[in-house]
Image (cartoon, rainbow, N blue to C red; front, side, top):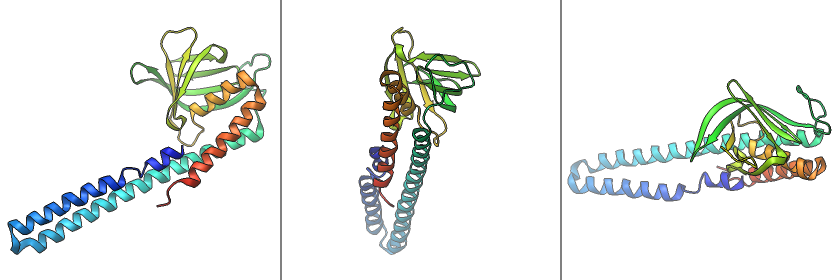
Length: 221
């Protein structure tokens, strides 16, 4: 997460250097071709460079601000989850010993076929035994004990899921950037299934700390 925030400005110096080089070449060519109009051409070129650099800075500031706001909101949601614990009640029948971890009403279900292919949008229920997606056209249930592997994307924005049964693999993708990310919640659910609720809540707190550390370490522009 910290890497994602710092990457926003990673290529700025290279792009700015290229832009300045092109601008200087333009101004020099103007002086060579038409000395009489050189000052006007130079002023126009300098203005274009300045506006472009300002626009780039403004865009990157907005991008970082949006990402920081998203991560901060996710940290708040995860902290609430860590403090309140998992719920023994849900809007559907829970199995013996099963608890509801989190419900996200804005998630996209996608098939994995070289790339993510959107299939449906709906709600996801994360419990200590399974993860369930319910949408307008699709319903998917992943018993956590049968999950062979799961791979979170950048910042957990999506999670690719492979099961022991094989067949087509699917992914859950984040739609609401202010809610905890699917990759994070799936990781917490898998920990609950394998190691118990206490370990899963500890992992939740670790996510809160890492997210807040990434926000605090982000470049201030």
